[in-house]
Each structure stands twice: as structure tokens, then as C-alpha cells.
Length: 330
Image 1 (cartoon, helix red, strand yellow):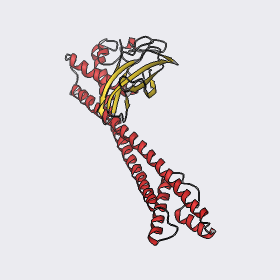
Image 2 (cartoon, one colour):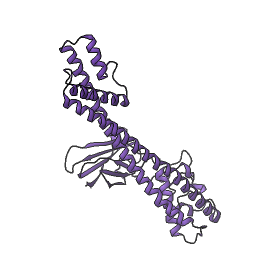
Image 3 (spheres, helix red, strand yellow):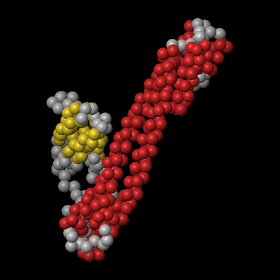
Image 4 (tube, rainbow, N blue to C red):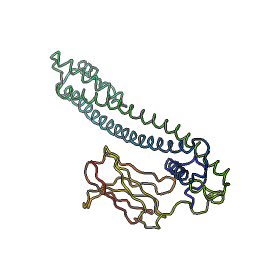
């Protein structure tokens, strides 16, 4: 049975590309009688290893970027809260001490709260620095309008934390994009290798030869057309469970979940729990279940310990039969 709908290799997903490449490597090893030109066999094997390494690295960088995003959001929320508290302190001081309008205007100007609240992170950082520096100056001058020193020192620390987090996020994003660009180049070379392999096989055996199947290609008579059952979906009937549900630990709290579909299922629902516990943590309730979109899913920042994962195929709101797997995060 054909694993693919057609031979349009440039339209393959990442998973489909890797499957074709692996099938070519396996087919080349199983059929030494197919005398491929030059070093095509070696290049295909090298491409498989290089692209897989880049994909793993890209996934790792994506995880690090997501962590940097979450930390930046955390720093932003903390600074936003402290800026609001600082603004309240200043306004409360002005009101409680009945400070004259001219002096009140001067205080608001010095602390940077004359206008509206900052609308972006750059504005928050600028305001945090201004507030911290103004209060430090007031403290050094022995001003009666100086506010609690420890609070404004902490405000300066939170301001610097957000500034640093933004820089780190930009760096992580840049690394991910750089690897992504490298993947595009390597993928293009892989497409050429697949195309050359396909053309060589067709030249030797014809466009409808079954040997094409062993290399991840589709004989002409088996190319899928709309209205036919989709190829390669030898999945369990509803309600399942799914035929494949495996876990792999990549380190640094990253757990990879590999699964396949169940006929008639629309989405997959993934949970995690301590083994034996009754409460389940929802990890993802919208995992794709159509052949073109199914890819390994990675959960980031999984706490250390032994975990049980549960995968439930869904058909609308109807639950299928669940699959379970254990993994230890160290």
C-alpha cells in the first residue's frame, strides 16, 4: 500500500519528508542492484542524519524560545504591578500630605507619572528606570518626598530583569530563525535527492513499478484522487485506541509524544498525571488527527518525577478509548 497520496515531494510535511528519505535509505540498502549514479546513496544517508539533527535542534530552540517568552511575560507582569504600586504611593503621598499643586506637578514630572500609563514594554522600562533613579536621588538628598528605598530598589531590579529577558528572548528567537533557515536549505537539497532517486527508478523500471513503493514513491496507477480512501491510514476503527502512543524524554523537561490516528476521530486529547492519581492535568485538547497534520508533540517544562500520559481520541464531543504510557523525567 502506498504511504503517500502522490509524488509531489515539495508539498510534503516535515514528517512526510523524513519518511520518504528514510524509505529511500532503506530501499537503497535493500536493492543494491539499483546502481544509483555517483554518490547518491551516501548523500541520501547524510541528508537524513543532517535534517533529523536540525529538526531536533530546531525543536529544542523552539522550546527555549517559548520558555524565554513565558519568562518575559512574567517579568512584564511583575514590573507592571510594581509600577502601578509606585504610582499609587506617589499619588497617596501627594493627597495625604496635601502637597501644593506646583510641587505636586514637580513630583509627578520627576517620577514620570504626568501622562498616561506606558503602552508597551519599552515605555515600562523607561518609566521603571526614571522612578528608581528619581527616588534614589531624593534619598541621597534627604528629600522629605523620598519613598521607601527598598521598594524602589526592587523596582529597579524588576526593570532590569524585564530588559534582560527581552534581550534573551530576541537572542533565542534569532537562533531559532537561523536554524529554520538552515532547515530550508537542507530540505531543498533533500528534495533534489528525492527527485533524482525517483527519476532514476522510473528510468529503470517505469512509472508504474511497485518497487517505487519501497522508496516512498507512488506508482502512477496508485496516485490518490479525491473521493478515494486516503492512502497509508491503516488506523484502528473508532473508538480506538490509537495503534501508536509512545513517549520519549529529550532532557531539560521536554517530553515528546508520538501518536497516530483513529478512524473517524477529529482531535486528540492529551493529559498527564502522577501514576495512580485520579486528577489529570490537561496538556493539549486540540491535537490534530488528520494524516497531513499529525506530528510528534512536545510538552515543555515537565517537572521532575514519574509521569503517566493519557491520550483520548475524540469524535466531536464523544470520547474514544484511551491509551496510557509512563515516562520518568530527571
